[in-house]
Image (cartoon, rainbow, N blue to C red; front, side, top):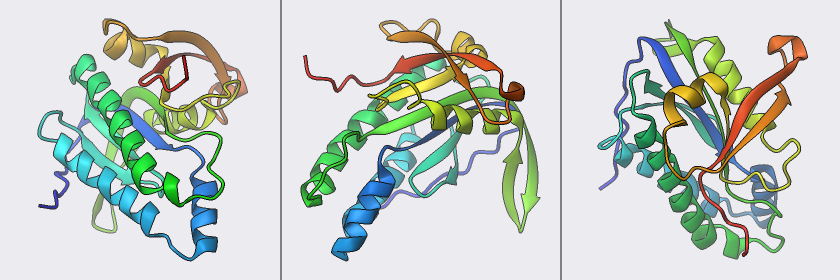
Length: 209
């Protein structure tokens, strides 16, 4: 049975999680040259259905599909350990699906595959655009900027997240056995280009030991 999204209305503060696929442009280019985008379409469909199914255990709004990822909105009072477990399980699921559905079709596999995340918290303003519920707010901008900059100074960014200090303290500081780095990034149009201090956390370690 195909699962369908349950839209969750966010009112006020929220936890914003932006994620997308590493090397998606390279994957799409190779599949396009082969004339067969079905593996990519199948991967997206699996992730979409996984997110819909996960709504039975953790409350969130699958707010926006971005072409190679999603922006998810969680109510402000969401339990951080529940969010961490959900994102870790999403990483494990994606890794299996990518390796089974997409990787065998690529003649030149990308050097980096997986998911990267940006996480921030803060107030969101709800509006209606063309009959659809939309949101705007600094937390959305920062989460997307963090996700986009995780690969800076990191040659192995897969299955990691950059998390603002405020979001880390509220949601992840008490989660046990989380690998954490203190990092700084320059985020475009955030803090006037000054260093943004944040935490980098790891959901899934894929490095050979």
